[in-house]
Image 1 (spheres, rainbow, N blue to C red):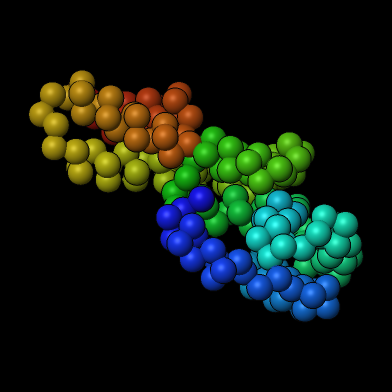
Image 2: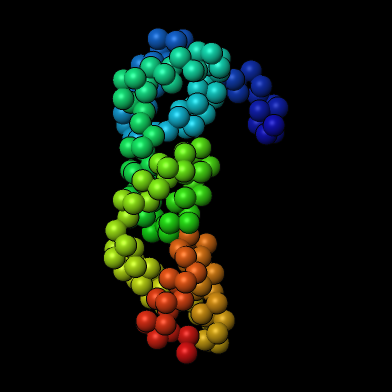
Length: 169
């Protein structure tokens, strides 16, 4: 428990929603951007909604097409790749954390064009190579590899991109 909550316990409890209020607010929450069941359940938990009511609300949102995990996986994959420049490994990990089934993760990752993926990797290699101030080319290469691997790119593709750009020799 945070220090703030200990000292302000009466103020820290969030106002919980009624069932009708929750339907309305969650419809807006899910319409604003793609959501998965996990994110929605998390929101319901934060608002103090009981589990049986939570399950009913989730069923309503799925039935009304506010939640669609396939649509979420596809949108999430495209967005994180194009905007944050994440690799497939990082996207897969994040989708797993959100309890998306493996079959839907594969569908989501299929949204990423392989040529665009490799071009993005090449541009990330060049960009990061220029940022690192290390003089030793081996250490510099290691740092670039480490950075791109942490972004979720595959090791074999990283090495191939570095070789293609003749960096680290």
